[in-house]
Image 1 (cartoon, rainbow, N blue to C red):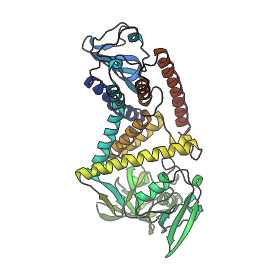
Image 2 (cartoon, rainbow, N blue to C red):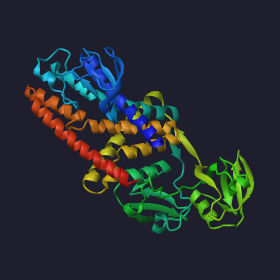
Image 3 (tube, rainbow, N blue to C red):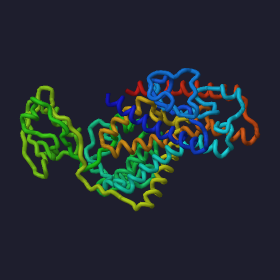
Image 4 (cartoon, rainbow, N blue to C red):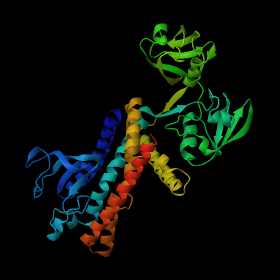
Length: 451
């Protein structure tokens, strides 16, 4: 249910912002907007000035006389604005049998048409810009002052590659890394699809460790390759009638050590607990800045009955910026993500990255939306901004059905000073829609396979 709720919320916000751009631009340009819809297909409910609030479909010959029907439709995978005198996803061509009217899209000039078509993309860009600006201005960018490894799980990809606890990462593919954020960005984003050459400092000596890309787990689903130092296991929840409950362990407790072994990872804690079935373990936990000694004995299943996460105990600073400088860095964020998007797309087409790892559909969006919302409103807004930017980049592509496809038609008609025949426009729209639906089906198929 969390996935469904957050998917509906995410798509609803993005579609509303995008379609409101088209709607507002059309109104400002003197055009009639017949329908403002969230979702596609059958009309479930809606409101307009002529009929008021009404469930179900409107009569086929319904004429709003310039009044917009605001509706919610059956398929919640997008939305649309139906502008009078424009061939769009509704495939309505009745208007073509009459002379162009002043309030129709087709009667307007190049600049007004282009403004209306690109307004949805501009609104998506504006949403991303405002969220990135807010993140830079109010909170700033986190800077985790470490590139040193903490716990290295035995037999893990990092362990078999030759990494050890205490290793300090200096460079990845000849690019220096100064904090954990630049390390993860360089490792999982900038070098996506590439093998890695990692410069490490150990016991005062520098040397390189090569890592094949296929050895690096997917960051989203399989966990991190590296575990940074200064991490401590933290209790999220305690099960009723469990060894942890009986021992007095509480949510929020931070595990510092177990049997005099300093803890640096929840995986390290899990290994010690699971290998000591029936043996009493001595814990030192931090609770409200006070160290407490606790004894607990794992059950026959090798567990003590807690839900556990991790908390970073090292130095984290937030680099904030002024009002105007935050806009500059927000623009830089958009430029970097845009460059990365096209770079990843190129690597997919040349076969360096699997399609399923680079592109996601409704299932992937639902998963990431729920995960980001669980972390907090800031994380959810940031995810929303990235998705909004992605929607803008996709929509501006010169492909039939998309806004970029409509813009290309407008440019062609302006250059040749004649309108493309309605039958050809319909054929272009149909072809684009079929290809888009097939692509969506393939993406959903990949989403399901990744579950």
